[in-house]
Amino acid sequence: MDTESLRSPLIHISGQQQVIVNNNNDTKQNRKRVLLVAETIEEFKKQLWLALPLISVALLNFCIEIISIMFVGHLGQLPLSAASMATSFTSVIGINFLVGMASALDTLCGQSYGAMQHRMLGIYTQRAMFVLMIVSIPLAIVWANTESILIFLGQDTEISAEAGKYAQLMIPCLFADSLIQCLNRFLQNQNIVFPMVFSCAVTTLVHLVVCWIMVFKVGLGSSGAAIANSISFWVNVLILTLYVKFSPSCAKTWTGFSKEALHNIPSFLRIAIPSAFMVCNDVVVYIDAFDVGELNSLDMLSFETMVFLSGLLPNPKLETSVLSVCMNTVSTVWMIPAGLGEAVSIRVSNELGAHRPWAARLAVCVALLMAIIEGTLIGILMILMRNFWGYAYCNEAEVIKYVATMLPILAVSNFLDGIQLVLSGTARGCGWQKIGAFINLGSFYLVGIPSAIMFAFVLYIGGKGLWLGILCELVVQVLSLLIITLRTNWEEEARKATDRVYDSITPENIVP
Image 1 (cartoon, helix red, strand yellow):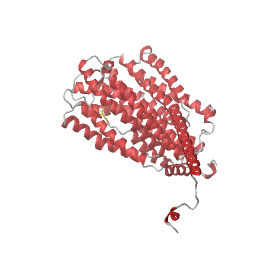
Image 2: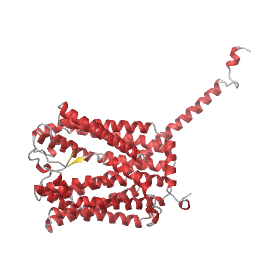
Image 3: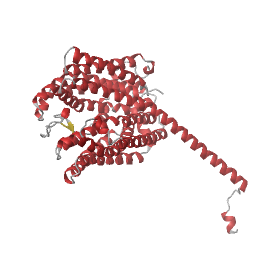
Image 4: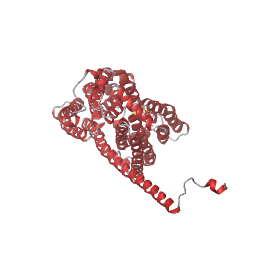
């Protein structure tokens, strides 16, 4: 037998037949490409449909805080300083922790909804409500002693006394927010987001009226603003509760209160506590302003660590003012990628619960693309506006010029933070809260703070160096989360999601 015959195929294919086979393969490839494009566009629409309302909710909630501060600001510098300090203190020592613990529902409710185990959404939500209300009790005790804590931390006695009264009157907000966070996640993980926008819009309007009446008409001053906050929070709870109770959209997921919610609390805490550390990864320090002089309404307020460190730099008044403007700017634009992060968390958890690993992976890819586009557009806008953005905060030429040099750095920071928020949302959707907590805490304490100190105080870069430290932290966060995401076995994550859902359900309650 010759060599050529040995190399020839067992079944001879003519040239015409080979062309037909190639055409069939090309047709299949084209169909796959068309299908992928269609699925990508559909996923883009789904995430946009979720993200835009969630961004609106974040902005409306931010407006409630701003309205209170604006009304109190008309009463004088002391009430403004005290209200601002109390608001910052209560946000860090309470609200942020509750938000973090409630985000455990992003994993539990989202995956259960995807697995069509609708009844478990109500059970998980009730369990979270119970735990968060219990956690609120010691937090309320801390709030009640705000004055003593602030004085112990070296704050001005007069401001601490006013801030203490404000925080005490805010205690009802703590318990209301425990319920709001749970109800919001109960709804959004079912892709029900527009009722949340309606509730927040009504609450904001109510707060505007009630705050005006309490502060100026009744004459309660800054105490009136705190009382108005409490009233508004409970109005939000009432609206959300009525919707959940009577809306047909929640008929399958909310079947009334059940004793089952009191079971498996340790398993909830195993996710909730790392979730809290994922959110509360920044340290906020309440300190004396290091004799930096008059800082307008910012004097003697609580600062986050970067602003605190800026008080140690040469010309601390300028550095602290500029860093405060930068943090306000970043906090505002942050709400956009934060909405994208919430949206991808919902989509990933839903798809993993439904055992569609390919769809979950596609959701992550689409969200990352959206974050890159958003970060690029916002970054370009910040760079174009850099020379006159400072005028929105003050008229001092030195501050305006300094802010202009900082905005390109903020643009890069926002770009990286957008990617980080999407990857963190992916982590919540998959149930990687413990990994996320280690990454966030490690990048902040081991990279962010040391880098900021080195750039600012060793290399003498000043306030820019502090923000470069934040960039280093974000780079570590993004790279760490990205490596984990790229190496993810989505089939395995879908299996874990299925196990997590059904391990929490008694056999008689499983929906086939």
